[in-house]
Length: 316
Image (tube, rainbow, N blue to C red; front, side):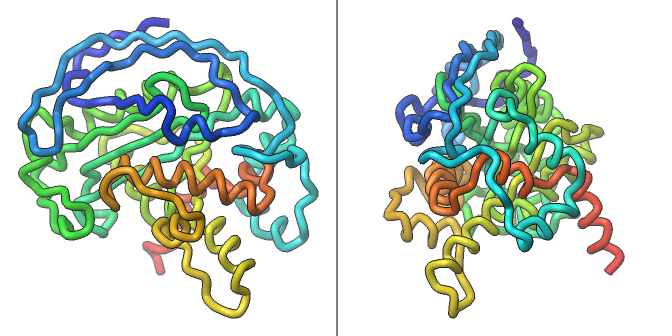
């Protein structure tokens, strides 16, 4: 399958070869041959330029079907869920339950860790200014990152992520309506034939996913129906609570990284740096909590679930 994109001059995709992707054990073996952009331009200071190049993708569907946890260890894919966990996951609909029971789940599911930065915290008024993602299967061009032009919305929280208005409000930085089709093609290039995508974000239910849904809607797009959305923050809290049941567990990405003695690549609260760190933290959490792919699917939300929560909060 070959895809030609006319506006690829405004984003960049990075490959990190042997970074955290190579720490993944067993459940999934990358067999895709992907040729996207080989772009080493456009640093955040704007001094370098974007490079225009066609996009060509070739994907194959064969991946290993080992019975292991999502990222390591040896955990049965169909683990019995206790009654408390079952109560938590039931409201999230039939798609998760059907998929979790599929014996071919490892052949169907692609796990992509994601993060985004915004102009501010208000989901209605603010805009996304940076997106990063990484397919945990690894392989060439498994990592995606780009700044996003928010238009006439100024950046008011530079103190958090270090991104200034003049870095993103530039004609060579893509606007969201230009970027969405490109991001969708990136995800599709990593997706297994006929499969599903699990998009993982830390504090995703309250922050990343509502922002992404609002931006898609604003640009007249919908989140694909074969995407599942997993918030890794509850996993972190569950793990830290087990270590300290008497206190209120803190489970920020920084706290979890310190707990696991993991080092960060790049600056904190930049999308790509957070994605690379969360990829490693997520592996550790799935092992410590003994979570299989089925367990993770049952903890996922769909876009409809998130939209329903957003509508409920709006009325409250």
